[in-house]
Figure 1 (cartoon, rainbow, N blue to C red):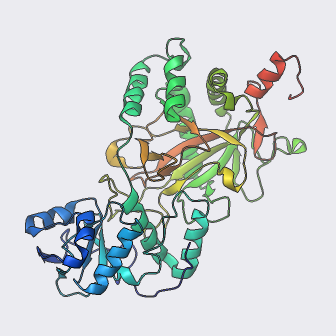
Figure 2: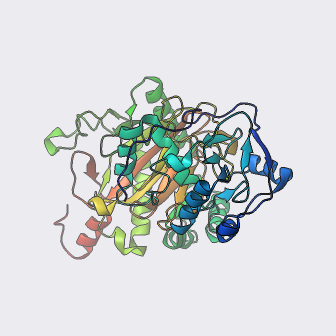
Figure 3: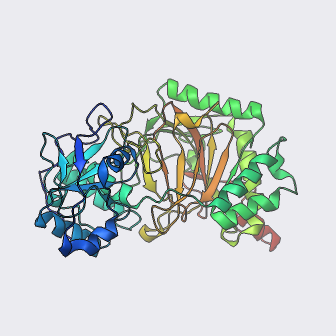
Length: 462
């Protein structure tokens, strides 16, 4: 990466701010050309004419405006040469100014998606504008943390600049079709245990890296666990979610570590308490939930060599993403996405992996998330967006947090993010691990590694 340098020039609108009224101050877009940079203009895909301009204002793409100067052309040429354009498009041909009314946006500026446009002014003056993408790189979180130190909340401009240029929103059609087949099979209690449904579940996890099982628990049990999570949040028992580095800028959830007995007190002699500073509580209702999810893991394990080493699971993590404030921005699919900050408060969870092996294996093999929300609709937001490992912003699938839906995915292969919800969003997460019991995990009877050891004639793993 190039060294970062502080640049105090930026959008006077501030982070996440946008002009009100749903209409940009862009005026007529010209049809001129710039012979010296004709090849670059062809790379962009220029928007011409007033009708196209209106489309640009309402679209979910990134649009680049400029003052028509040679300096602007040189900056845009450099973007093209470094393959940093992504899906960005020009509002006017090079050499022809993209005019603005009554404001100085600088030589080059970016119009980000939204119901009201948000402008990144003086883009060519920003030290981060020509940096290679950080999302999906081993140094990603260090980059964003450093930009926060350097720029404060304006680091979000740099994140948005990267995210919207490279987001590829179309998921795999074959994955959606397989998901629909699983949804159609969820007609009876414990449907996922039936022999005729097991191959489809294993196939989806094998082919797409995730599977989603609706109506996973008996309805009464699902309602009981949901009530426990909501009551804990109402009693203000949940603490702020943080990254493993201790930072909280990337996520906006409240969390509570739970088990059938309070993890902080049950079995201290076995060192099964949570880490210092973590909130925890006893939730007896989890006993039957654990029986079901452990059973699913045991059912899947013979199909996947990587699951043979699972010997423990984490304590359960209740989470609540509180209702997000009204958002100004839409992502490239047209869905609301305000990112981690809105008036200084985190609201979603940026793209991340649950087990980043380049930074040291944390033991997480399989992530399982049980959603606890009644009557969740698409208009409520809060979807989990699953990405491909490469390219890092290629969407794999997107799922709503519908009540009694269990989502499973490989912890070290499926990056994901949580979009901000418009109402409180609850879930319960377990990780299945290939490490021994420690303060944040416990052994369980159906652990695949234990079963493998017993089949081999030894109980040394018990």
